[in-house]
Image (cartoon, rainbow, N blue to C red):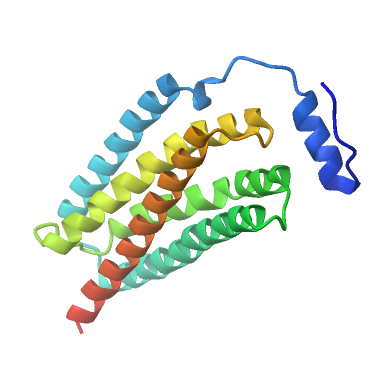
Length: 199
């Protein structure tokens, strides 16, 4: 494969991506892996909802959970915004494709930790499960989880493309980003609304 001359670290990373041999996609990058992870994640969310309806924490524990909830929001949503910023930098040609994808990949861990922290701490916040807004927020969280899992497949296929993205991959990426932003902002707004209505 003929390579264009490149300079610096970004050039070396791009050459490494292009020189990678074609390998079978691992389980966490396949639709079979997605289906298994989606079932497991759905079971965890269902368990969290059930526990939240049967647990009544004291005010001190609830305040601790609220702090963890807010910290998890900062961690998870902040990482999502930075990841999307990396993609924007690639679109406007301030980052190479390898730099953008590499940066997004490094942010997956804080995103998942933040989302998990939101779910676990939310169990102790006495959510109003009968309220319409709370149910919409739960749908957003479920969509965020499934969207994040399928984004793993998207990321691996983008890496395999080495920057030569098809229209299908571009549309897939745009839809994934839109769903992520709508669900994160929607969850934040509903959380703010619920908190304001209790004041």
